[in-house]
Image 1 (cartoon, rainbow, N blue to C red):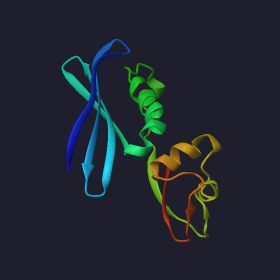
Image 2 (spheres, one colour):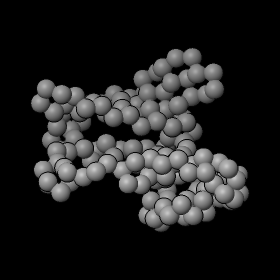
Image 3 (cartoon, rainbow, N blue to C red):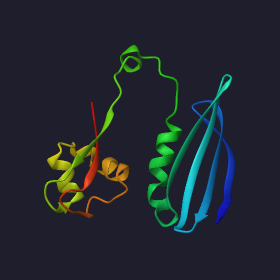
Image 4 (cartoon, helix red, strand yellow):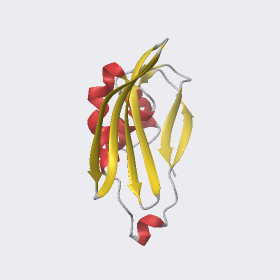
Length: 138
């Protein structure tokens, strides 16, 4: 068990100095790969981590990078004064694919993949009746 640094580089995120690290953490149950961003803005450092199993990392890496590379100051009052989304825990009523369950809970088509990721599953994964599923809402 332990951690190993795979890559470390200096980057800029919307003009802000940042450090991007890719590391792998190995434990008894396997390895996870982590991408970390440390973004300096004035006297604060904002830290973001994205992680998944080592085998799935290349699939999710573009999503992690798009999220972290998108960090920038918000100046629009309509965006600043927004009520946060909440994660709701819902219980599936029937056995079926995760995609079917998410649709039954009213998840929009453009949020299905993101919600599957939140649940650590693929849309095609079978979920038995009574499974607890995370769904984002107001």
